[in-house]
Amino acid sequence: MTDYEYIIQQVKKAHYSEWNDEELRKCVDMLPTFSREEQLALYRSKWIEHEKTLKDAIFNLLFKERIGERDRKIKAMSVDELIENLKDENGYGKFIVLEMKERFDALDDEDKMKIIDCLSATTKANQRWAEGKRKKINSDK
Image 1 (cartoon, helix red, strand yellow):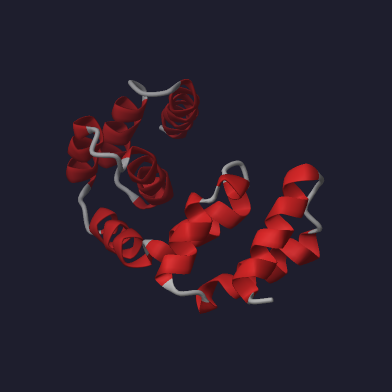
Image 2 (tube, rainbow, N blue to C red; image 1 turned 30 degrees about the vertical axis):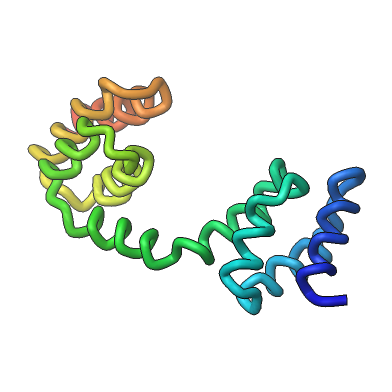
């Protein structure tokens, strides 16, 4: 039995029951040894349609160059560029928001307020985060 067949067997078994954490880890660790074609076939398999851990691991292997490029591009942006790109809805939204939140404490007050204002116009979770930061800035003054 090949490693590919082994993973398919384990995925089918987990489809009807639950993953054994040790077995799932073993399967994820095997993935880098697969050819791109095997990774794609497994990714598209109906058996892992709802298997997030394995599917995410395969996705990261298939697209690691593009993911790395996206991350480098986002990290190189200024606050104004992040805000502009968030408005463009280019598919990087959640990563741009994450970058804004990671940088927030190291920024000056002007950039902090830009981020707060921007995120206040997005999701409820971002609105709550922004309101909490706004209160903290106001209480520090």
